[in-house]
Image 1: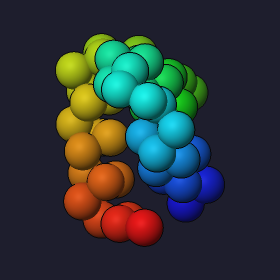
Image 2: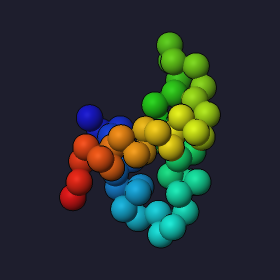
Image 3: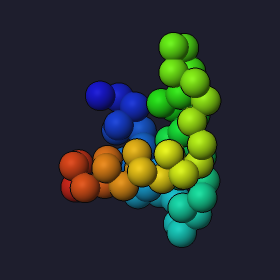
Length: 55
């Protein structure tokens, strides 16, 4: 849950830098048993978080 909240907060404070939000989302959700995620996959994660966790 905290990774989702981090992405939501990033999106809130990004000030128009969506590429940075996407890259950070990919970094947060990748790793361990999950291979590195692309910024495009990070964008899909960020969009899902926004749609699910509206302020």
